[in-house]
Image 1 (cartoon, rainbow, N blue to C red):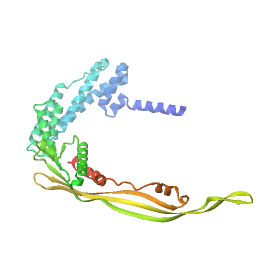
Image 2: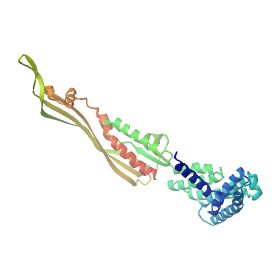
Image 3: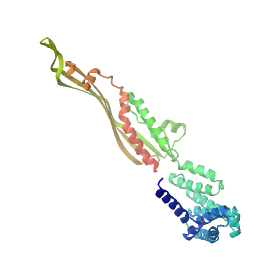
Image 4: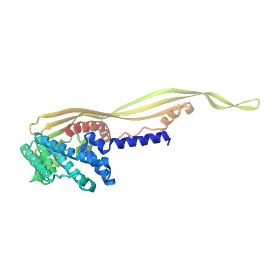
Length: 378
């Protein structure tokens, strides 16, 4: 490392240390940080005069600022104030704990712990959030239940197991969970297994993405088994129109030739020389295409009112292609790619069920994205 770079790093470290010294932190108004920094220095070097000065000046200010913040917060009507009130008391208790664990600091300031105040703040917060939850949790409205659940969780955060809050959280979570019945698309018997495959994958992916999002998707069979007779919403999947395996076969014939190809030898004056000529071939390329495609209508309905919430059509297509060729004439006139085509034979087309699955792949992706965007923000 060059000396100039070394000294630059040392200077930067010294500057950083100086700017974050207890006295500088105190002068910037970072009273709590100044107390922590001063106590840390006094543990290492009890006779550090600047650390002593910073501690005696910063601790009263840290305490005064925190208590003023608590007083102002208590006058607020925002229930979220309780988080900040508790944080202020916890910060003051941390400062007192740090000072108690430093003999020199204890000779300079007398720390105050706010244990009773912290407990009272927690209980006050728990009661307020619990009451808000009870007031909000009326009926079985999903959105209201979710708000109530958040209130009950807050009450439990401040005082673990407050009253019957654990049961209230469970009840609110039950009513917060959106239950969605997803109806599988029905097709003619030849393609129903493929449609079922599409549906099963779709349902699995929806459940994976919305896991822990208070949304549960049921097939009709599962809803019947779990006795979900009145879901909140219904998703209907319906293939409006589809075609599978529309065949189109084409051919194209071209003349191929290559100049200066060695075709033999000639003897001149008792010596043999290579003979060159132009070689020709006729190449016929055959292409077989099987086109498949369709449209899926997705409808999201409110189960209770039968009101349309969302509706969208998604299309998909797939083309299976097989290509081969036949040549007549001299194969030396063909390119390497043309020779490879000639080595091929017509492939056996996929089964109709497989073609159905292929054209539904883009439909699947679009439908998953569409429904996820809706339910993740519901």
